[in-house]
Length: 438
Image (tube, rainbow, N blue to C red; front, side, top):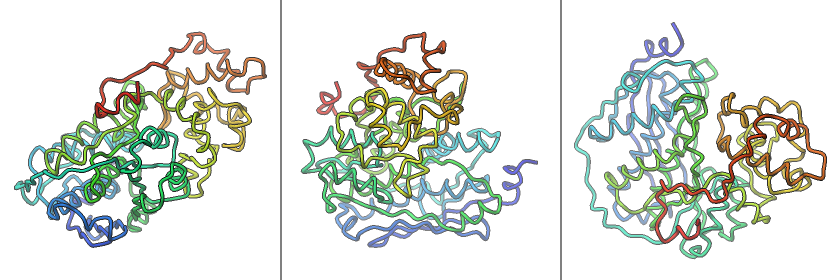
């Protein structure tokens, strides 16, 4: 019997027991048998005191707990999830099951778990009498989540004419995120910084052999950003997810590391908040019409961010590029189409395309016969275009090893499609902003 089935037989039930809405924190209480979890969100008291409707805030915080619980459920995957502290109607139960199942696609794949959306979980709410809210609140300006990478930098710059009304939202602030906001001329009083703490009991269970893996963290960011945008009078939440986030990682499947950054989730989340919370704030991705190619092309026009941006997960705690992972190699390739080697080496510390040890990472990013790495990276079409343009840019110089081998491959013979004018019409960008993207 595999670990998934063993844990499900040992732990039949996951319970969302309660949640706390304090002046300076939210605390969620989950339980699997005698294992209790109490993840906490900490923030300045000023950030929620102006909520237009305290009951709506309370229900939104309950929903944030719903997005949090899957990180704790996944350690044992109990077949039953009891919600003891909030109401969900039938449509909401289906909505949450869809998010969990699709958002855990990578987790199921890596742990070799065979299951389906009907049987993996049964959600039992304490009531189906969902509260209704007036939704008459208005707002102004944009709340811009800042992750420290090139994408949120581009959104900050595209929306700079609205800066007087905007604020940055940063989950677990660190050097790169704060430095990018500061470089965009947002002062500390215009930065909403929130700390999310994982319960240590979960980490201890992981060391004991309980299941671990990727969860849809961007859905957690979505619900938390909605709460702080609502309490701080913002009309919009402007994400920085691009069209490329819709591509799956495993050939022939829909398994997507970036599911909760996809257009599908964005559409679902907009429906959920409009139906069960309020039409304002409105959640959308500013960069959805663009490909990663266009984002990189735009980003390099803002050199003031080169010393401060950083999106490597491995190096996030030290605000460095580890220059040894698929994410670093991916960003290196995209920027290599526009920047000289000297500038890239300043950012990453070495020429990553010169290293034989990155060949497996390179193959996964570039070639159709290989699965994409489980990272937030662009499509193979975009990466091939970047490599082709990088080689043209260096036509009078010796090409680094991996780029030279690529140019001698059949892939390079296909003359990659030009994506300069790409525009994904399946987006939710407000009409007044579309001229900034076309």
